[in-house]
Image (cartoon, rainbow, N blue to C red; front, top):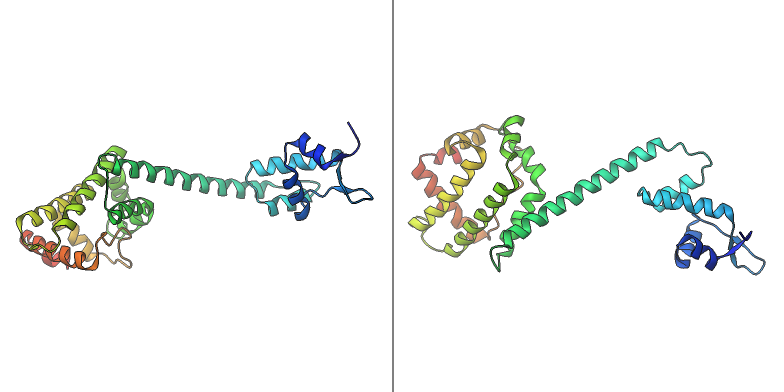
Length: 252
């Protein structure tokens, strides 16, 4: 092997572009030798350094982290590796959340050509904020109960999301009608039935717990994806429903 390689030859041998080698040089990550005319040349030591760079890049280290490590002759990197592993696990968790949200999004639009944008965004946001929603519920229920509430199959969760989207869409269409009308109250009834199914208890018990709990923050999955006027109308319809059910006071 030649004692010195031009940047073009080194790039070909390592599979790294000349542009990247220039960038590594600017950063002080991989500094070549210079000929009298100023041309960059590389030797066997640079191959060893490049091997370190490739390894650290594969492990997900930043360029600045790589530079600090490469400047060390002996690597005592256990703490750095453990920290990097934690970062990768967090990234993996985030990627999985995105994949999960995409699965739910595909499920929502699978049976219909169009869906109200605010409803779609609200449901996807609810999936994103699932951990926060769990924490909020812990102000009402025990940890075991919260785990039980969320321990449902993907199929059931997606079915609930489709039903929720359909009910909200119908409510939006009904907005402006008399909130006491039977068809409006039927939609509220369907929402309340969903709530009972999710929490696994009747509305009286649920609202008693909410009323008696010390809740510092609002439910992160609220408010509903409704405009101010739609929300005011829906609240009036809800108030009528709860009054008829005899639980208006608990819900106040």
